[in-house]
Image (spheres, rainbow, N blue to C red):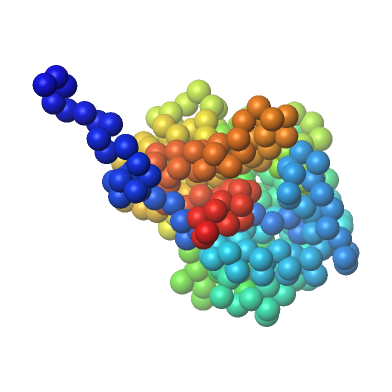
Length: 323
C-alpha cells in the first residue's frame, strides 16, 4: 500500500525520536563567558543581555562555582579595567582585573577550565583592537601587546588563551611567545573566522569596548565572504592554533559546516550577544517560546559541525539537559 516508506514511523513518540536523534548536545560542549570588573560586591546587570552581569571578582567566584556545579567545563573571561589608555596597559598588568580573577578562580575552583580572551579593545581608550596610528590599527606593533597579554594570563594560571583581535600573524606570535616561556602545553583557541557583525552590539555594552571612531571592518571579516574563512582557518592552523572558532555562529552556520568538512581540528562557535538578546527580547514580548528557541539554536550550531559552543545560554541549557 502506498507509501511504502513512511518517515513518520520513526517520529511517532518521544522515545523513538530520542533513540534515533542524530545531533546530541550536553553541558560538555559549552563555554560560558563572564565579564569581570574592578571593585567589590558588584553585580551590575547588562540591560541588553538579561541574565548577564558585569561582576567584581568576589561575585565572579560565585558565578564560576554555579557554572562548575552545572557541569559546564569552562569559562571565557573578559576584563573591564579601571584604567584605559592608548597602549592598553591594563591588559598585561600582573595584577590586572583578568589576572586577579584567574588566580581567584584557580585557587577556589581549580578543576574549572579557564580560557581568557586576548584582545586590546576593552583596554584601549579608543576602543579598537590594537595600537592606532594615523587612524588605522598598526598590525605588527599590536602583536607585541597581544603576546604580553597572553603571557600574563598564563602566568596567572589560565588554561588556554583565545586571541580575538584578528591581527594577521597573531597565532604564530602567541605560539612562539608561549613556547619560549616554557608554556609549550598551553593551547590556543583562535577566533579564526571572526566577522564584522551587527550582532556584537550588546557585547560592546557589556565589555565597554565600542570603538570611539570608525569601525572594525579593516581587520574583521566581510560577512559576504565564505571562501576567505577557509583561508583564515588554514593560516591559523599553520601558525599553531589548536582550536579554531567561528564568530558569530547563527548567521554563519555555513562557515562552521565548511570548516568542519575541510579541517580535522576542533571547531568552536560563538553564539554571540546579539543572537542571545534577540531570543530574550522576543520571549519577553511573548512572541516565541524562549526554551524551545534556545535549544533549537544550540542544536543547529552543533549540527552544523561545532564541537564547542560559547554561549550565554550555557547555564539555562545545562539546567534543562541535566534534568
